[in-house]
Amino acid sequence: MDLKALAERLLPGEYPSLASYEEKYPPRSLTKGAQVTRLAPSPTGFIHLGNLFAAIANERIAHQSGGILYLRIEDTDLKRRVDGAVEAVKSALRYFDIKFDEGAEIDGDNTYAPWYQRQRAEIYRAFVKHLIEIGRAYPCFCTEEELGRLREEQTAKKEITGYYGKYARCRDLTEEEIYKNLDAGKPFVIRLRSMGDPENKIKLRDAIKGEITVTENDQDVVILKSDGIPTYHFAHAIDDHFMRTTLVIRGEEWLASLPIHIELFDVLGFERPRYGHNCSLMKQDGDTRRKLSKRKDPELSLEFYRKEGYYARAVKVYMLTLLNSNFEEWYLKNPDKPLEEFKFTTEKMSKSGTLFDIDKLNDISKNELSKLSAEEMLDFLKTWADEFGTEAQKGYFEDEEKMLRVLTLCMGIGGKKRRKDFTTASQAMEFIRYFFEKPDSYEDFRVDAGTKREILKGFLAKYDPREDSQAWFARIKEIAAENGFAAEMKDYKADPEAYKGSVADVAEVLRIATTGRASTPDLWSIQQILGEEETRERILSVF
Ligand code: GLU
Image (tube, rainbow, N blue to C red):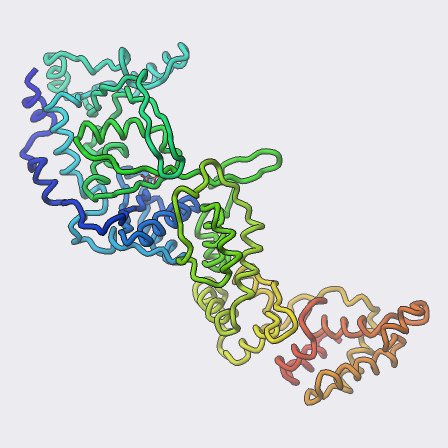
């Protein structure tokens, strides 16, 4: 068969020589040990924890080694493409301080661009054409229905499904048959003519999983679809070669395709990159462990962390804890150091499913947030509110002085113990709401209406905002005594029957009247921040 003529018929036109691509995208000049890694998401608009997981690993390895991290957009599947998805990836990752050195929407004129696979059609086709010319690729005219029937037949016989060996019907079509099909205008895909033998095993070192053995590929996989767009497998080989990736870190769901990729790199005459297959994030669901799911688990989406206002460093700390088995020990010793100082290694990455536990993340978040100064907390909350807060919440920051006092009090700054009440910005904003908005609901006052009135009346009569906290508390004791409550806790404890309650119950009534809540930081301090007028107004409004 005249393969050159066939290649010309299938992919007509002049293509640049293969050597010219090697020149156009030359090997990078890297310092010794420098790694080129990449993130290659499909622009579906859904960025998830798995992406962040891989992004952190890729970013650390590239930047720690003095190498490069780039962003390639795998947009070969038009159906799944969503507008604005690239910006969404970038901004989601920017939040976690993952910065790309090169890539889509960063440097379109870089030597290794274009970064969108759709813009790289020529190069894929040039190499497909070459493979047809050397007899390592061929057209396949099988229809979806025929392939479906084949799958059923194989499944019924309990055989491996796919297009291989005796099942690869178009592999040995005669020249006449091929041209007849083409003349009839039948659509076709281009398949790899595999030379692999599943009896043969390939041993290799996965950067994460260590020594692994895979079976040689014998599937004649599609490399170019009928619309002239390559499959993931083929684009991966071409792009990671010509973008000069040295280490491919990707999800372990790709491990099964590794034999195909090995054969493709070999047949194309490319040196293989190193691979590292990272494990999936699992969730404990009752007695079983399952993969985090888009439908069931909102925490899979990175959008969730931004909307809730997770502190990026906390999420990163948790991700690093899951990613590298020696990170936790380092973090305990260096709780305040920049995370970049931790030496990340692929060898310490977990080899099998990692359990993601949001409660652990929440603990880390509380801890990390409790280390912030009031000013840092203000910046963090303001950034969140500007993007996700209500109009009222945005308004909380008009008086920064007041906000700093609120945060100092609520975070326990300067007190005996730093408080750890906040997990996220949205939670913190809700926590401090009563300083800025009047309560819209009240917890149960737990005293009868008459008693409540008397306590509030007593307070309004005695309240003097110039008094310090001790003097203020002495007034509360007076109100307690005047209303049949024990002014001293010990008196109440000694004879609870003799009183309506204790001074603590009186303070609680005032606390709820002022804030709507039964549990708050120090009430005197809250009233100091609110000011006399606001305090009086609030007390009056619940009479
Ligand atoms: N586009 C592929 C995905 O989103 C990338 C896999 C890879 O990193 O090679 O799963």
